[in-house]
Length: 162
Image (cartoon, rainbow, N blue to C red; front, side, top):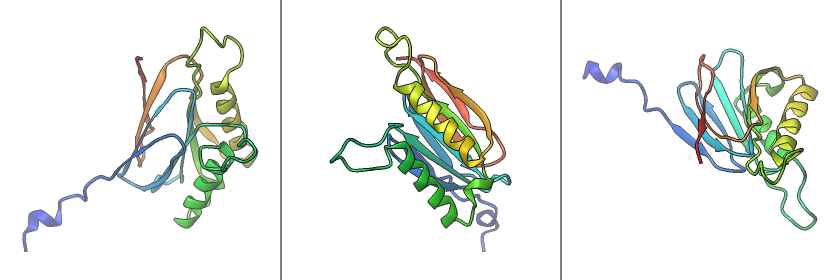
């Protein structure tokens, strides 16, 4: 038996989330997304063994006749909770990070905009459910790249020039 193979860590799995995606990952796996007015909610159990992320596009519900997909906030968060439960994690005992909600058209929208609505919805929903938010970085006019390797460290967030 080759002893080197015994100590080789498993390959890191990287999941890149696009608008409306929801994903669950194990410790050591990486979750990534790019946000403008969209919002990402990241949840983890306090031991940081499982992590989950959803990429919310719309705080409001779908227009009549349109499918109710995970692009909509309520469906995305519900799916995120269901995926955590499937991993044996109670989502209401998790901790959260919230990112995004930028104003991508500041010349057109000076007051309220869709990014504000998305960020407000996410923070209010987590507060309603009793899920503590460890950190929120919302608003502004920059795109955000979010990268998180599930584990003890916080997500990496960087501004992206357009």
